[in-house]
Length: 114
Image (cartoon, rainbow, N blue to C red; front, top):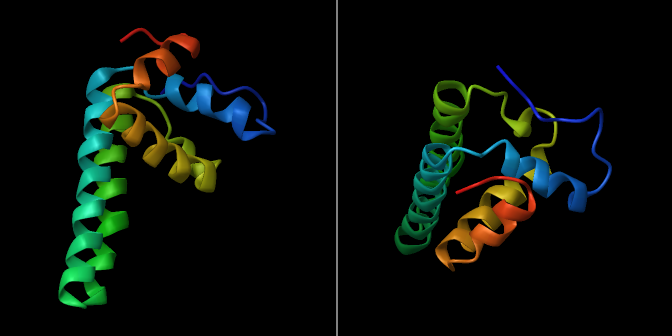
């Protein structure tokens, strides 16, 4: 497994480019989008049905697809093990940047080519 991680990232501004570098392959990002999208589906189901058990699907969907991507495609260690909160925020940030068509410039700024 490979990693672009420096010793210790101190700020989120330093972390996000590293996060994007760890998601360099389009297939890795695609699996993240599926997991993140499914997490919204589970949230919607919980709200619509009033059944909180649907919320258990949120982390299951998110982590399953992310870990398949990191271990199977990207061949790196998920950043969530070292930076759990920043990774969670970044998963959703990457999803919304992608959905809004604004992810490309962030990838390029991080040195990742689409």
